[in-house]
Length: 443
Image 1 (spheres, rainbow, N blue to C red):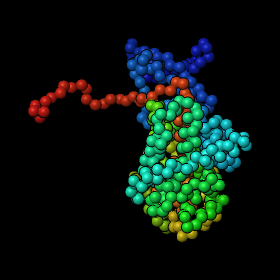
Image 2 (image 1 turned 90 degrees about the vertical axis):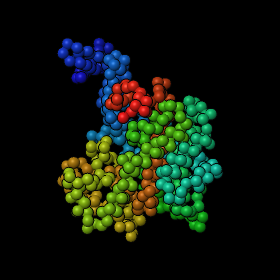
Image 3 (image 1 turned 135 degrees about the vertical axis):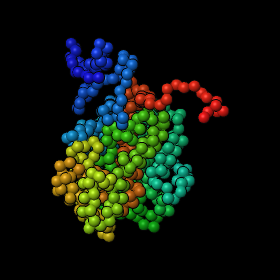
Image 4 (image 1 turned 90 degrees about the horizontal axis):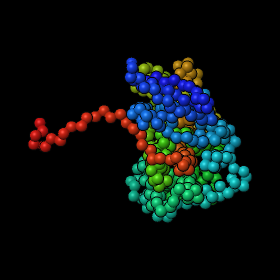
């Protein structure tokens, strides 16, 4: 079924699809659309009605599921833009809540807008006191992501379905609540697993500092957050805030397309993010470093990574989308070295292994030619490990950051006048229709 591209008399691009062979060829003209950046796309929405066929695209690798103005990625060139601003400029010059405002509202805030936004988020960080009982229903050794899925889903019962989320103000309040409360939920999941008392948010702290004090402070003493470490955490949150139509974001949009409560939609996103192929990648980096065990064994594992017949793979190198250097990794690399210089590697045996792996990957022709550069998961895993955050909590930190992206995408979808419930098609490969056979006659 070849296609050809042409231009109509009105100047609009179209694609002509030829279906069949010999004398039974049928030509279908399909409209094309162009974004402000990126490749043109063929609009196949009328294909089934016109030709009784539909497209097959496992994992949606060549299918646009929506229009969006939020994030643009060019994986070949290593470009990541939020609302037109490069991730490098945002991470270098901005802070996380400023990026949150940008993703939600489309523009960077002025001084007064930022002050109000920071105030509003800061004063939504408390959880309803009854929410703590949800935590107590989990086993102490439950994975923090399992706890977060349950607790975030439970917020639907506190901010119930009687709220009209088609109304912009209701969506704004839900967005603020979700961004503000996620650090509290993640920190409490950690505290619960440690058997320590919950630490409440403090309005005098910034977003990243508050998150860290809720994780590490105790009623016995305050936790002093290093400015270098707080800035590194803020950058981790910025760099993970949104990443276009990835698996978890697509899940949030698909759940939201049914009109589901936004807290339930975010719980679905958290469940998807939990997967080791998605948000769990930085946790997998630490497991890999533990498996290597010492610098003396790095050569052995490098050899295995190069062997096409060996199933071992270096985690945190290369990226499914970026075929060049991950633009987030460039920023995260400097942040990692800043944190290590600030805190020292101490007695942590994994950090020297990570640094040596980084050196090899940036110098070895095998990795350089294949563009298997260290990615954002590699460096974020190192930073979080150096901060003293356990690897089981890494994906929860990711969820804290990605919540703003999920809410921005959910808001955009809810505001789309053409919104429809998501309903992918399938190629059915099972039995054709057959008759029911009574049990006594079955062989």
